[in-house]
Image 1 (cartoon, one colour):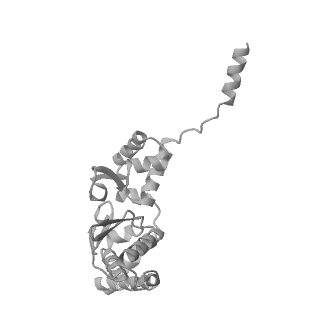
Image 2: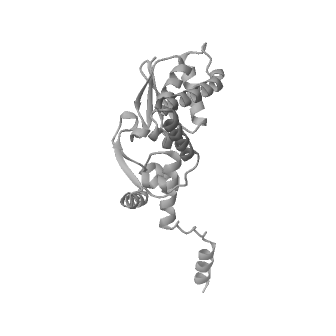
Image 3: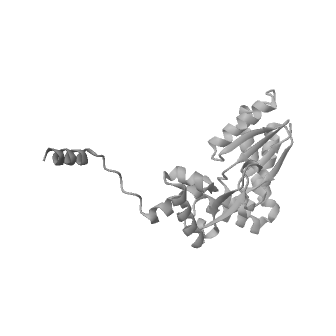
Length: 226
């Protein structure tokens, strides 16, 4: 009798675990994470969702079958073991409401139709000049290149680019794992060209773009020649 009472008390004292998220809700959260943070691995997504990697992979497979996600194989930072990286398809992106990015694409399309392709580049160059004027105070010319590169990476982090900075010999490699302007960049490569020119101007150095998210690659990678 006492044993049964102890067993009952122990069962009552055990903490209740929260019910697992319904599968469909987990899929929605997966899409939201990829939309917000850019291309992700199954390991990244599992960690963010606090689920097992096999569970994340099952949901990712379902989303691929539905045409909402696509997977590609790449090496992190160009090195290491190949891994699958998942990103939204056009159908997946269409699942989210069009907002600022959609408005920008529409405006630039009208500018191009009314004034020609060169007008789009002028608009984006004017935007770069405005951004440069705001950031120049943070990147004074008298600072060594390393300090300017590190400050630029910090500023880009605040702007949502999710940057990673690595040194490669005398060069610096700046990897942007997210593109806040992806919808626009896919339609107008001039935006990426303008970004490249902006970095070169701010750093006072030669900058070469090696990869580009808008072309379907996992990150925008810039090499800053030391």
